[in-house]
Length: 209
Image (cartoon, rainbow, N blue to C red; front, side, top):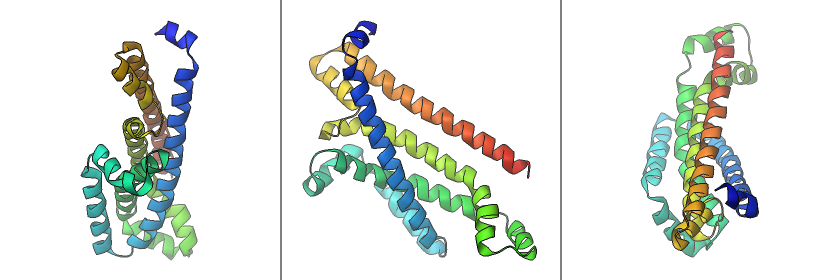
């Protein structure tokens, strides 16, 4: 494995950079859409439950099947992969964002209102900090899910670390398979640990208020 790294470094860092790009773009778009959806859904419990139910159905569809369904619309490549990944992430993000805000103790809101806080102050100083652990938990799941499913997206020419894995399987090259699996795993573990650390620090700050 070390020999492969020294002789063909571009065959490792290029798919890795592609994978990071897919993950970053997917997460940015997913967060933006989820935030807008939640801003609309939080006013209605019925709509919130319906949206979460709809996205849970989408999330249950196998990724290869969803890729195949959307290829006639978007074609092969990264655009289809990002669209599918964003759809999957909505279930994880919307559910956790809504749960985070719904779980806030109403007594805290009443106390803040009694102190004369405006709606903007209530949101940024009370609601958002208290909901943030749940939101970050959703982001954490979304990142790990994106890293994993983006590997499968190599089957539709989206690039990424899946290229190493599937090329290794096609050519029966165990070194490529091992590097693809190792880099995918390390990327997911690193992202998970980073978000876990941020969540713990945030929880400590909230408990200290």
